Amino acid sequence: MTTQTSPSGHLLLNSISKVFEQGSNRVRAVDNVSLEIHGGEFITLLGPSGCGKTTTLRLIAGFELPSSGQLVLDKRDIANLPPNQRPMAMVFQSYALFPHLNVFENVAYGLHLKKMKDNEIREAVEIVLNMMNLTGLGKRSPSQLSGGQQQRVALARAMVMKPKVLLFDEPLSNLDAKLRIQMRVEIRRLQQRLGITSIYVTHDQVEAMSLSDRIVVMNKGRIEQVGTPVEIFLRPASLFVADFIGRANFIEVTVLGRQGDSCVVKAFGADFKVPCSPIIETGKQAYLMIRPEMMKLTPQTGSKAQIRSTIYLGSSVEYEVDDGGSMLMAVDTQPHFENILSEGTPVAVSFDPSTSYVLPYEERPSK
Ligand SMILES: Nc1ncnc2c1ncn2[C@@H]1O[C@H](COP(=O)(O)OP(=O)(O)OP(=O)(O)O)[C@@H](O)[C@H]1O
Ligand SMILES: [Mg+2]
Image (tube, rainbow, N blue to C red; front, side, top):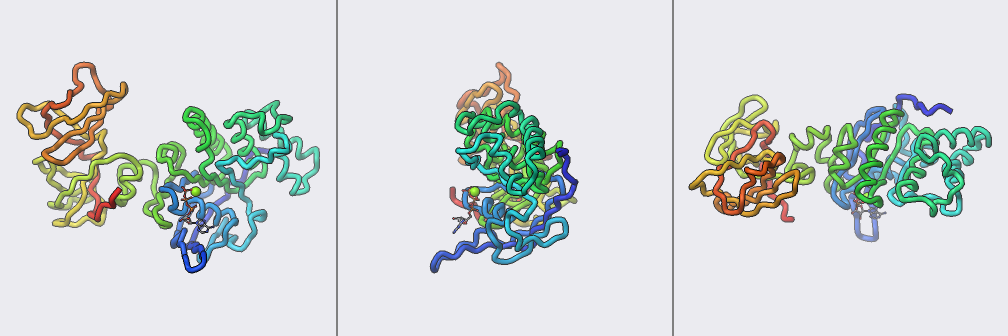
């Protein structure tokens, strides 16, 4: 067995919907989702609890059938294929290892079902166990392994099937923070080495940012935005995306004019040219999004803006600023001993326009 897979694994979701019927109750868990996933791509479905991430993944795997829409893998319609005939493998949050089988048998299980010869199975399993740093652990039972090792076995069991598409449903949420980061790095390295199309579900934005080629932000069964981590963070398509992917100040502004991809808005008593959403029009109300790290605070006697709270975190300082009644968040990511601002200090507020963004106005959902 070689560990190389073909560079195929191009997946197309075409207007996929899934409606669950429970008596008179209808839940539209996935609502008209269209998405193209390129061969070898690492894509993450990100969104709050109940937004339809797991259902989308289960539709791709074949554990659920869509109410409408098409699913096409490498130009072949697979919507009606049962899960075991789809060249895919899934890794679950719970690991889902068989407790009565040892590590070797767990990994070999799917190959036995495929009726592979014993000596070929042995060779294939050994290669994958080595690849996953599980050498020598084949005879242990899952209960004799750490959480991280168990998740590696689950991953080995998926990889040994040489799938065209790997599906992950929150695979790291049962691990402690340090192990989670380590496993994240391992998953990304392995995926890049083997070039297997990977679809990863999480509600952790940092995990999504660190793993993904592209992120799909979902809300209420729909796609809010598809983009690279940088696009999603710096050019969010909606208030929901901007709010979900990190902390931000949203300042209500009127758009004074457009210049190419930027528009002019007034904030903190001055005009700024800021990158803006393509659907923003002159004269309209909008939100100026400023990430706390992009805020600049300069001590200024007599300014109406004042530091309300200072939280020193070592590598950064978090400030809450009262700007004449409205509260702003600011983070200094390069604090020096002499320039930490104490509570009550009057400050001039400014920001870096190039890393800020103007978003269309919409009612802000109550939290
Ligand atoms: N088998 C089912 N029958 C009825 N409703 C369901 C079923 N499975 C999921 N749902 C509903 O569909 C919606 C989407 O659920 P889904 O499990 O896809 O969310 P999720 O984004 O994975 O959330 P989480 O982050 O909590 O895992 C929810 O409202 C959920 O209650
Ligand atoms: Mg889920």
